[in-house]
Image: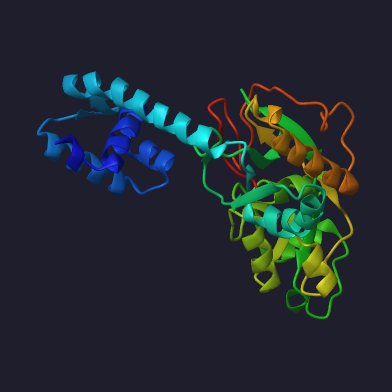
Length: 331
C-alpha cells in the first residue's frame, strides 16, 4: 500500500501536522492551500483513516495521525539531511544565494563577473524571489536581505544602508524639471512599497506636516515593480538610489528633489550559524561585503564582513529571517 502513496501527500500531512493549519503548511511548501487539502484528502482516502479533526483554532491530529506524525517527520528530516550532504559534496563548490529581484537586477548581477574572475571554481546559484525562504529547508547558503539586522539564530553581516530618493518619469513632470520642496510631492500620485511606510517617514524627516495623502496610491511588493510603475508615469516613487541609477542615467526617470534620505534598514548577508565554515560561502560573503564597501560606509558600531552579528528580534515585514532559517523580503 505504501508504494502507491505519493511522497507529496506524506509531506503535506507532515507540514499540516507540524503547523496545525492548511494555510501555514501551504506557505511553507510554496503551494496553494487547495493543493495541500487535496493531498491530505488523498492520503486519508488511500489509508482509510482520518488523520485530522477540525477545531476552531485549526486542525488537530487524530490518535492515528499523532502516532504516525513523528515518524514521518523524522523520515523527511533524514531525507533533507541526506540531500544536503550530497549537495555539499566537495567535488563541486556551489553557493546558493537568495535575494530580491530588484536587488539582484540592479546591484548583484552586474558585479558577478568580478566574483567569477576572483573565484573561477565557485559556482553561484542566484534565486530571486519575494516568497518566504527557509535557509535550512531550502538549502540556501546566503540570503541578501534588507532589515534591521536582527535575525534570531542566524548570522548577519552588515553590507550597506541604501539612500532613498524621490523619482518620477519626465512625462509625469511635464514641463517641470523637478519639484521645489518635499511638500509638493503630495500634489502628485504617490507610489508605495508594500507597507506604505517610506513616504510618511521621508516627508516627516523633511518637516512636512502629517497629511493623509502620504499613504494613498498604489503599492508594490518589490522595488523593481515600483520603479517600472514610476517609469510608466503612474506616480512618484521613493526608492533606493542604487536601484534606479540606470533609469536616471538613461533619462527614463528624474530625481525630482536632491534630498536623499538614509533608510532605516540596511542590507545584510544572512547565513546559518555554521555556513561560514565552508570556504566557498565565506568567499562569497567577504566578496559581497567588499563590493558593498565601494558604495557605502558602515554606520558607527555596525558589524562588517569580519564582524558577524547574532540578534534576537524580528525585523520589518519586507524580508526577515528567523531562528528556523526562514526569511522574508524587502526589495
